[in-house]
Amino acid sequence: MDDFTSMQELTPEQAVARLEFAYDHACFTLREALARYVKTGVAPTAAERRHFRYPRLDITWRPTGALPYTSRAWAKLQVPGVYSTTVTQPAFFRPYLLEQLEPLVAEFGASLSVSVSDLEIPYPYVTEGGDEFSHGTVQVAELARIFPTPRLSTVGDEVADGLWIFDPDKPRPLALFDAVRTDFSLKRLQHYTGSHWRNIQPWILLTNYQRYVDGFVRHGLEELQRPGSPYAALYLPGGAVVTRETPVEEADAIVARAPWQSFQMPAYSLTRLDGEGGTTIVNIGVGPSNAKNITDHLAVLRPNCWLMIGHCGGLRQSQVIGDYVLAHGYLRRDKILDELLPPEVPVPALAEVQLALQEAAARVTGDRGEALKRRLRTGTVVTYDDRNWELRWSQERRRINLSRAIAVDMESGTLAAQGYRLRVPYGTLLCVSDKPLHGEIKLPGAATAFYQRAVGEHLAIGLQTIDLLRGQLHSLHSRKLRAFDEPVFR
Image 1 (cartoon, rainbow, N blue to C red):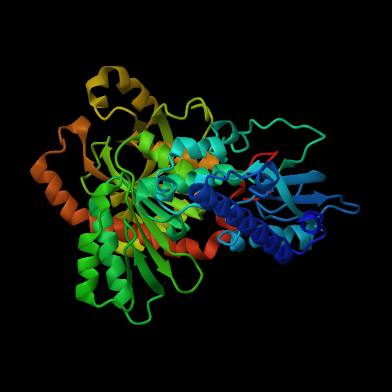
Image 2 (cartoon, rainbow, N blue to C red):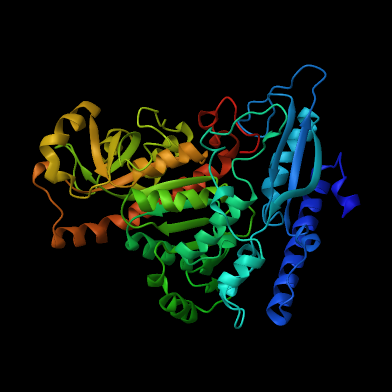
């Protein structure tokens, strides 16, 4: 490995290949040592443990002439020096890594090097689902004494939250998430969604109603049967998959058997054949805690966008149940991010997402101009952590009035704030399901009729929005999401 660790001045392709080689070597030696210990009781030596480490990627930039200009919000260098990060699963992240590295070398003349880091790979991160608990009579506590384990002291969001401390003798952060933070979330994604993280797609719909998921599944099955469709497969919670070759009757049976109830936030993913990225829908359930939880983990995949499509309470008399609310601002009363992203920090609307949502609504509903304005209203959404906020109306009415809010929910402000905080483009389109301030409360009969009528159209708008955004990646990753001392990678 000595020759390997000294490799410098690599091309992007060579750098990623070296990352893959180093990572595969580390995982292989760790698995072999684990298997040997379970079989013979022989623990790895200190020398062997030096191989259980993540690879490290360094970028060095020493500009000598005029600094290049780019309108791109990411993959650009602004301060000379060395930038570094550890990397996990480089084969999976290869397209992302090359997307970042190629312009840094071609436009900025940066130098790339790959080495072995000092950060050990926790043994549960090199096992497949459940294997860390399947080692015969060897207890997990015993393995934890012998092999590297996840340590909270090495996992954090200091870079994303701007809490990293500059030291002139140390490299600057290259990416928002290092290897151990990424691995931490990849395992959590499988736990919460019931889907392997490799199947989660870069375009994400987030909802709080299973009916949207049911509609997405019907859409996916129809696309897989449609001649000429760009879609390849539908991945279900629990590991089942439906492909274009699956007979219709069998596909229905596979979907019916999927154990989505076993997972807290089940995910369904529709993959594409054309390399433009498929779509995943996640039923995140109700409340800002769930919204923060799942987006903390989805963010490490560096998705292109996440959109909230759910229901809200309309706050204006002029609204009609079934109308849409396009959020252009958020009154964040969810409280869950107040320490990380104080409420006084504005969370901006992203023009590309806003325009795509509006155009998608026009195409799906067939309404334009004044007709569309009557059904789709743009305004502020207030997000609460208390579902029974109505019981505090006397305390909340003035704040709602001052904000000019037009809708209330429990997730949208959190999801937008997380997108802003973790540099993932975001947007919100809600459907009015009740009007609590005007006597139109959510009753069982009316709610059922509303769901049957509104869900299909609302989901179609979300899917159409993603289709519109697919051709806007360069502008979608907006400079509005970037800080002045931002890591290089998006």
